[in-house]
Amino acid sequence: MAANDRPAKDKDSVSALTKVICWLAAFPPDAYGRVKTPSLRAKVQANAISVIVSPVVFTMALMIYGTALVGNSPYLYLLPVVVFALDRLLVAMSYTRTAGSGWLILIRALILLISLTMAFAAGLLSESKVLLKLIHDREDAATLQTHAGQNLLARIEVIEAKIRENEKALMERDAIEHERLDALRLYDLECRGRGGVDPKTGIHIKGGGKCGQNAATHQINAENAAARLEQLERIASENKDLDGQRVSLKKELATLISTKRSPADSVMSYWRGLKEAGFEVRVKIVLLALCVMSAEAFALIMSEVPVPEIHRLAVAYCEGVDKERLGVFREADAADIARVRQKIRSEAGDRLAPMEVSVDTPTTRDRMPERVPGDDKLVVEHDKTVH
Image (cartoon, rainbow, N blue to C red; front, side, top):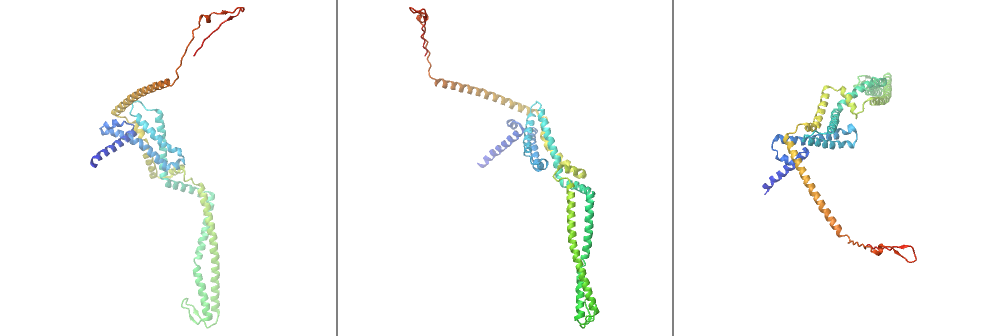
């Protein structure tokens, strides 16, 4: 039972697919089912694909690059619907011998021009990072050559040179600290230790609890080392201030550079960056624009390709059948209207009350005047009653 149902399901699916293809290609489904030549079917299928490709490409371009190009404009997203309607209308008109409307071709050409512009802009946006870096590098170099830029660079360079010098001096802080500790240790050995040679420094120690000339020398060396350490502390504090000044100057320089840069969200910035781009980047952009343009122009091109004569005959035959069907429907509809009208009139007449009309014929007495004795006036009496 399942094996018998499967062909029926496949047939239904093919029939549904055929209806979709014919609806997109504006071709009669009955005629398509009778056509067995692959090339003739391929022409109808190509028309159906061409009607779909252009709106899909246009929609994808709007979804990806629409905001960057035109901002948040919801009305622009109606253009794919317009493109689909125009493409299907142009394909449908290609089956007839009459030429298409010039206005339709003009509108489709304008939409194609919009698509070409969006395709080129899409190519620019696809290489936006490279193009933006190129234009910003050129603009930054020009900004640094200005008087304000040179002044900031010179001040930063002086501060960095002073910081490097201070850092070089601060690198001796550990050695000076060791020197101070050794001097204090030797002083302690001279005053409290025993005589001999210090194994660490190799200096002769007299010792014996006498703080003589050697002890005084070691004390002076320790004080000098301590003074040098205090000076290094001041240098470290100075370095912090210089580093703060350097950060402030770099921020000021970065602000100056950013004010002179082209905006990162502008297509014109990418266009200016294209002038600085190499051959490889330009070729990529042109190839992408050509791909989008060819997809957009597919439907317009297919509508101008000559249609096979058998397709014209099929469409003309279906058009004649439609005319006959509409004529029969019109006559049947007119007969139904007449029948309903007669029925309404009959029902309206049955609901009306009967009407009687009676007329009394005037007599001779009514027509002749009667003279009243003693009076010269004529008296005329009329007695008419209408019911």
